[in-house]
Amino acid sequence: MLALLLCGGVAGAAGAACPSPTVPTVNGLFYGDCDNTLYNAYTTSANGSILYNYYDAATTTMYVALVVSHAVNDLVCAPEKAYTQNASPPWTQGSGRNCKRGTDSEFATFTFECAPGSANSWTWQQALGCAQTAGPPGSNWVSDPTCGPSSPLADWAPGVGAAGNSTSTTSWVRNINTYQTAAPTPGMTADRAWDLYSSAPTRVIDNWRSPFVDNSILGTMANENDPKLVPGYSTPSIGGLTRYSDCWDANSSSTCDMGELRYDWEWSMVYEWSINLGAAPPAGPGCGDASIVVISGLSHHSPGKHGEENDPFPECGDAGQPPCPILADWGDLPDTYLTTSSV
Image (cartoon, rainbow, N blue to C red; front, side):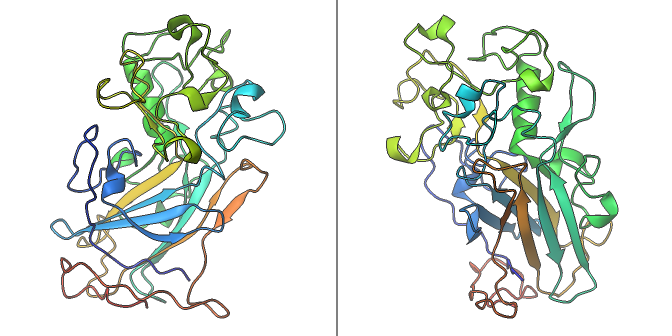
């Protein structure tokens, strides 16, 4: 099994254009709110996705984020094949990736255990998201037990998923809810640099379009079918993995030279949740003095960019697998949490 033992976070140096969080916020953002400066990378999947965790001793809360590799999947979607083929790396499957196909059967599988073999063990699927009300406008997207293909609430670890987007969410949920709040009507608005619904005639999800550089504002030199031109998308060959599109300060970054046009879009597919380890059911798992173990099985895609459907994490410690790595905490955990070695 894959054991994820608790580690306190070590804050990295946030850039001038970023806030400086003290604990992660379960909002689906990883790069966009600088949670990436807090989370600790624990393990990497077969295709480069990374599972992160962070433990806040003051509130006995553990935060978990699964960030899918862009080689597998990301939140580039549109009805136009040419647009998705310009992703980095590009989509190679069929007619590309519209936003309905990109969200209707995506999920991650998690298992939470108080200790290996404990009866306090839960396994569930967390969907990328679903709309709770008809729209847009007015759709309220969530990533919780009410979503297919999410598991029912009884399968989730106590305290996860029951409180809506405050304990479990994804980057897709955050992107769409934020856009619809700021720009609930068709057409360009003052604080959005592109129109999600630009591929009308109808505004159904099949016709939605993730950020693009709008030729009507930036001139004919721009290519609306190339998401790499959107500030903040970036690729490894041109400036690293920013993976969040916003312009905080036009004078501080070469990627923000387009008149403060605001995209506010997390491109990475992020599954995020938290659990209060110090709480008894139903508010928490009631682990007591037990070690805390999280197992992530995989993220599922329908399909991924190159046709794969499942992106599994290695199962260290099982028969035929290498042992789980020895970990040490950062000195900020209660003595009851056994975090100095794999279990």
